[in-house]
Every structure is written in structure tokens, then in C-alpha cells.
Image (cartoon, rainbow, N blue to C red; front, side):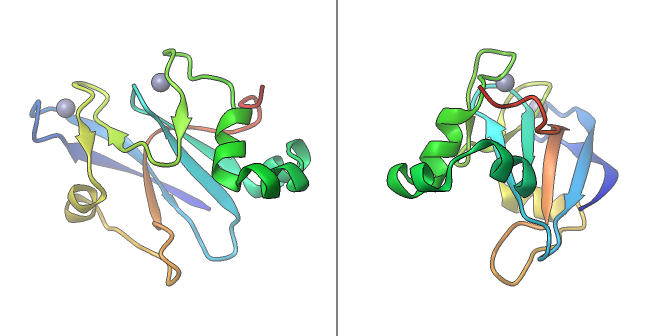
Length: 129
Ligand SMILES: [Zn+2]
Ligand SMILES: [Zn+2]
């Protein structure tokens, strides 16, 4: 998982802010969830998931639901969701992946995993309940 830096311009509040760009390769097993209230993005490495969570429960409850339920809330009070959009850290407007693609050098994998994750990302070591 390579990381780069870039500037992103928000059309809603007209501010420009630095973003981190994660380039996810096919071979990287990782999961990305945005906070549903603020601009934080959580990147979970597959090994961390394997170490913490029970695959049988995952099968029963559903992978996404089980993962979301097992995570601590965000420090802003929001929760991490697979379906939550990226947000501008200045005005908190949702930013679609299409807008992101237009502004930065977007790179996607063949199986549809977004190659770029933007946000104020933090790693997963302390994210579990
Ligand atoms: Zn948050
Ligand atoms: Zn904004």
C-alpha cells in the first residue's frame, strides 16, 4: 500500500487541503471506512482484521455489518461505515469518488476496489472495541 500526498480543492467551501492518497494494490488486503460525521478515514489492514475478528461470526452476521459493529466510535462521536462518503475536513460536505477522480491521479483495480483513498487516514491498530 503506497502512500502519496496531494492537495484537494473543495468546491463547496472553496478551500484547499492536503489529502493522503493510498494506492491499494491487488495483493493488499485492506478495508477502508469513512466516519459518517467527520473527515476521518480508517484503513484496516487485513492482518489486523484476521487477528481480532471471528470469521464464523462474520459469516453469520455479514462481513460489513460485523466489522462496523466491532469498531470503536470515531473520536468525533460518529461511526465508521463502508458506505460513508469522504468529507471535506473544512466544511464537512460529502465528496463523491467522481469528484476525487477528476482532481487527483486516480488508480483503480480491476475488481473495482478504489485504488485511491483520500482523507485524514489513520491506521487500525487501536480501532477495535
Ligand atoms: Zn469522525
Ligand atoms: Zn469544503
